[in-house]
Every structure is written in C-alpha cells, then in structure tokens.
Image (cartoon, rainbow, N blue to C red; front, side, top):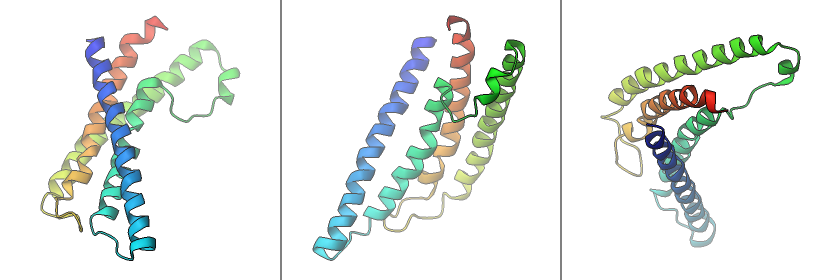
Length: 153
C-alpha cells in the first residue's frame, strides 16, 4: 500500500513539473508574440492560466503529504507534547474537512462547468475545475499516508 501511495505522489509531482514547464513556455510564447511578433496566439494565455490553476491547487497535496504547509511554530515551544499531539490532530481534521469539501463542492462545480468553454482553447471549463476533486482525493491519500507512517518517524 505504501509503495502505491508513493507512486501516486510521484505522479502528482511529475505532473506539477510538466505543468510548470508548459506554463513557462506558454508565458514565453505570449511575451514573444506580444512584444516581438506583434500578435499573440489565442491559446497561450488560457494554457498558462490552466497550468497555473492546476499547479497551485494540485501541488498543495504534496505539502499535505509532507506536512510542509505554512504554519506558525512559535507556539510549539510553549505546549506540552500531549497538547501538540491534540493540536496536530485538530489540524489533520481541518485538512480532512477541506478534502471532503474539495471532493464534494469541486465535483459539483465540475458538473456545472461542463457546458462552458474556455476561451481560446474551446475545451470545457470543467478541465480547469476538475483539479478540485482530484486534489481532494489526493488530500485524503496524503492523510492516509501520514497516518500510516506516523510511527516510523
């Protein structure tokens, strides 16, 4: 099970790298088109935006997996180990709630946007919003990973 989860997150990490490269290339195309050629391709801005949305939202699952999200640690020095355990448990519950919300609301939003089209690309807007339920599932897998590996730390 652990190996499967590691492969799952390796794929997410690889996809994030590809999205970053595509975004940089799309932005470079916009720059060259706008300032050098004088004509920007209609597809370049929406591709850059699609990559940015996917990259920003999907990469947050990697931070959840590694427990590397931004947080204030100044309180950690003043709390007992038991209080820290409770606080970490509450944080995990908040992430769990967010994961359920992303799956549910993101799924509804994706259904709602299937008929809309992204300008310049002509693909359904659902291609942009489907990252929400995917990330929600990734959060759930990340929490499972952290729960299963908590005794190894």
